[in-house]
Length: 85
Image (cartoon, rainbow, N blue to C red):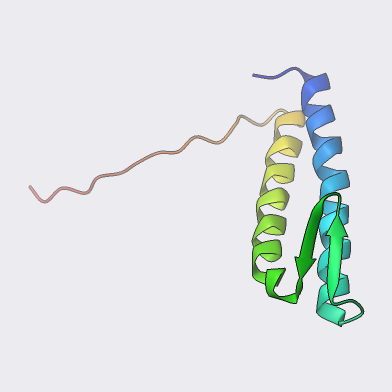
């Protein structure tokens, strides 16, 4: 598991990134702009579904990092295979 300092740094990066994503989403949805630049990425109105998915992913990652900081264990994927005996 990563150290507390590493988790805090990852969390700070994701929080700053999600603010940029929120700004881009709001600008595109409101129709204020026809295209939006985030660093070297150009987004247009057609990019909205991809942008929404990226926001959801980033929010999940932030939630997981915050949970790790509060002492919760990392999530584990578990597969269940139903059987008919």
